[in-house]
Length: 300
Image (tube, rainbow, N blue to C red):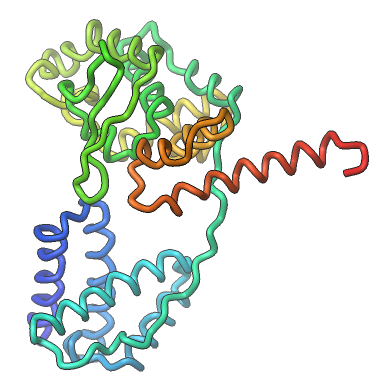
């Protein structure tokens, strides 16, 4: 029976991978959700497809009791609802036990972003007298200049960047390709990295790799490696010890809007499928306007 449950989850994830084209990160998250429900069912010696609405409601409550955020639980509900609908379509279930189950409402907190002085301090933090310092400066410049996600940055290939035109090509969520402008400053640092550093990383192994940003062994930079680069230089710059690459993405979007960028153009650059996702950054700008008003208006 457990094999049946695992089979359903694997079939569903294969469907999402092959037919829906979901990103590896999303598939990994959905895989964790399926595994949690499988373990919950196994603890009761039952296959997942035998769970009733009340069982799944208890499972969701258990996720909350385990300390998972409302946003994470909502994602789990979305993933598992898709799995049960898939099972119904495939004829493995007659009725969907999650049909009347609602996800907890996630609180949409405003994303954090840096001020311009903080961005300048962060970009200046790497020691560019060293090879890895030049590489790190190029990475930070690209992160802030483009607003790319971590997975998009580490997946960049050398051929994806046109330094003459100032554009790069990236594959985002849903395997969708998009073009993003790359400013002259970022182009300059990428050009220097390519000319002075990349080929010599890993004692020449860098010459063999198509990937743009490499680790010190000449291999592909990992997600954690990129996070480590950002955090290390954030500490040096005195910005925030908990700064993540995604904060640079938020900063990119916020600073563009504050300087008059069009919301639709920003949506295209960020790779958002729905403009409502992009509109969160208009809330940030309004929050900043309110703070300025409260600070400087004599009757605020």
